[in-house]
Image (cartoon, rainbow, N blue to C red):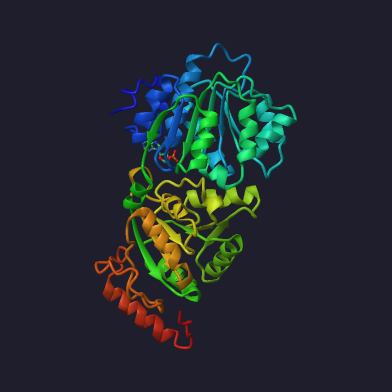
Length: 420
Ligand code: AMP
């Protein structure tokens, strides 16, 4: 199937071909016809499936079909998304796909001064991408009216609820015209999410793409059992010895992320951190450096990493395992995007074993553990006993491992790692 088969109009087709998109992804194949017909949509899909284009393309096409002139622009499409990074990314996608149309889009988010956002709004926009807080703020100040919204997208609904945006969302919904097309996306469909979707959608068509397991199957995974104090040496070792083009390293806390960066930089491994305590500019700069390859290692917290879309990210490293198993799937979904393959390493200390069990239950797989690595002092207690064929990461065969192990031990005799 091609985008032409989906009856996408020439200006958008040209933009897609400029992006190098040759065929629609499954969510695009299923959602675009529904949305072009003006129906509501309940999409169960995570980032990485091509879901942004799945809603952006039909919105652009529908807006263009109904456009009467450019003199008076009203905000006709609203996309609400939980994080600034995601908002910026969606805005960039609208800009790319709408490049050959007269439609205008802009993005607003908190944590920065509002002046330039207000200026962009004043000059007139058709499509607004927003995080909830700043949206309500600018509505209250009279800079934004939602009276002309024809298309409303609530993106990453599960994350919205996790981040406590439920009241903001309800306030936003109350301001929308009842006559509208609504799209609701969530990676998971817990009862609270389904309830929220009922408040937004009329009689939606449902599209379910890439169940959590699919991403997990696509990404090559392995776990290193490692005592907490050996995690930094193990991380340095992997970054030096493995063929890692780009690594997104996950830390559970902001403080932890800073510490990892500091210790890596001290060992001449250039790394940057991205988390909520960094200024918006610092976050954008770190992301840009990572995207253009100036930084190979980006250390992030879950919330900050939510919107990170880096083409061909080769490795995700879970320095800390998440205590919410779905988060693991979100994390490893940063690599292996849009059909590419990816690699996910997880570090698991003794206290994190229960998290690992929950993750394995969710994804329905036993993650192979790397045996005999240079920093393992934790005895495998048999929980992972299905992995006799455990395959070490690429280019990391056992003889290499043993050699590294003995090298490491001989050069670090004075260290005595804690026995867990
Ligand atoms: P998303 O799920 O919207 O975050 O998209 C994930 C990635 O897939 C982004 O880097 C998009 O640019 C890319 N992408 C979206 N649609 C296609 C397509 N039809 N062909 C190739 N890449 C795509």
